[in-house]
Length: 267
Image 1 (cartoon, rainbow, N blue to C red):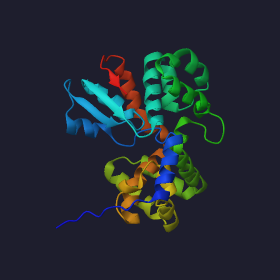
Image 2: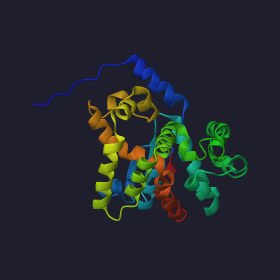
Image 3: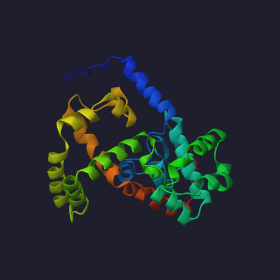
Image 4: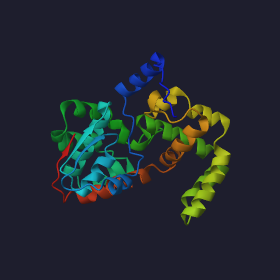
């Protein structure tokens, strides 16, 4: 007989997580593959979807199935601010500017365009938030694009700097993404994993503050061992840290099609 072990409340852990989520954008892109959801859920024009907002990418892709409505909710209001910004950008920007904003993540004109083209479709609170965070897109500083901002973006940037400092490891990373087929990719990945997942890095990823940065509350963290957690989380960290633009391809493909849809996205 299987038993369920209850997780004891941890006031300190909960405080850290709440502080991180109350004041920061966590996810700048979704890590999950929405095509799997679409295949399993078989959305159609009668579907009403209720989902966690996250970065809004998956909600936008679900629109391709033309559901009746999508209701996005999130414990962190900054995630809804990001989805609202994406909706306004899709509606009001041309393709070139849209790609700079959420494809490259660098759009020096963002502050001006926010005021002249995007403001009308943003709530006052979200407009104020993006005014304060306009530097996310200016291409300046040590973190030069949007996908290295927010707490997961900061972790992705740290990961990318780690790889850049270790040339032999970085060459192995490039081999993973240059693989000709899935079999070769799996082989190259396991070679990388053996070199990269040392005890120090595993301890770092299992740190509560780091997990809070990555938006993972303590009660929902998978497993109780380092191996379980790392094996599930690490591939996403690696890909976002080194190839942030690849994470937005599904969003951009969705944006291209959404102009022809009349489905309303509720947020």
